[in-house]
View 1 (cartoon, rainbow, N blue to C red):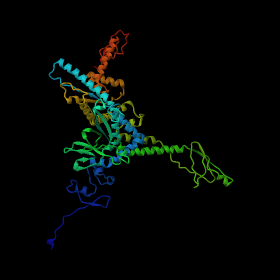
View 2: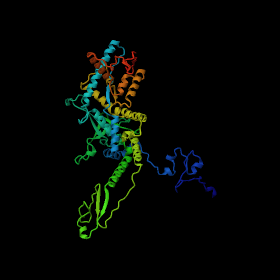
View 3: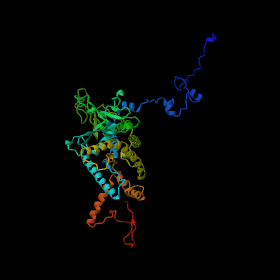
View 4: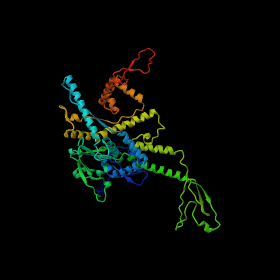
Length: 539
């Protein structure tokens, strides 16, 4: 009988330290046996992967980029907009981001030009002059169109840029419809823009069988083909339009402005998402502290009265109030410097909470630092408190902050918003006859453009200008690039300088700003008899 018994393999169970739970040992583990059986595995990331006391309560779901947005986007939008409306710091964060990213606008500078290969110098010079005239025509036409860009008629093109960024920061994303208009509408170029909040595209609309994820249709290779948009904002739906109509709009007619935080993320999250809890709690704390201070300053003292006749005491309420109501309750309204009268036998007790103490300012400052970091701002920008900065630390902080702003300008605003609008504008300008392409220039050449944000103000004007001048003189940069960095077009600057010089020559005037003149060193004394060495000038 013993031969019929088959010995079962030896099994080892491991008890999780600090609990009554047993688990099977890790199959194929490369950890030492004594470590595995000891209940304290030496994992490569101890806090994240361990089962110790500090990590046991840290359990998170494995949400994909689409799933995380699907379950949290609607609530994040509501709370972000609520804080932007009510919380001054949240509103300031949105305002500062919009003003730094857009400012007065990100403007286009046409780079349309033809090839000069195989031409003589005279022919190339003539063609360059013609191309410059054509670029000036594009700039003039686009400037005229900017006032007509808004389908609502409330903003110009650059105002739409700011509104689109505000919608992205507050709500996570903004959709812009490119609306082609009829010739009889009388527009400079038959194109207008309609801005839509992210709520117009239902993020809950997902139909995998039709390749629709979060309100966006895709083709077989993962390219966006259409957006499903409500004609009216779901939050503005009245009783008659409680179920707004959903339309399928080709992706080529929509600009989707959003910041993706993960590869594969289709929809954008509000930029204040990581700071919402701090903003809400800090606002409540500041309001409670203000109310405590206000109430503490209302009362000065109490007067206790004694009555010989009981009916006398029932004739009215305390000083400055009416008598009690039918239920026997009376309302006392306190005002500053009040001496409140109490009836015989009445007494009042107030809580006497400790003062805020010396840590109030430190606590608020640290909380706002956390909000600023979460929103991508400088603490000084958010709070307006520059008391702890000098010019050197301010310059270092601004350099990092401006690098982030320039990244958002190029990756988000220019590529997702400005670029598709410019391409459609060029096409419609040519089709409508507002622009005529010069002979030998391709459509791709006309598309060439450089978008220039508003220039950053100088921190040290003299030093900054001197540094740029030295860069040009040393050949590290060009005048065209330096002019573009301050938000201008070098061709326009040169034309204005030429016009200024021509007018000065006609009036027999001479200015040191004339680039044709040798600049005189202002440090040289005119009475020393020495000839001042000319100071080199940029260009």
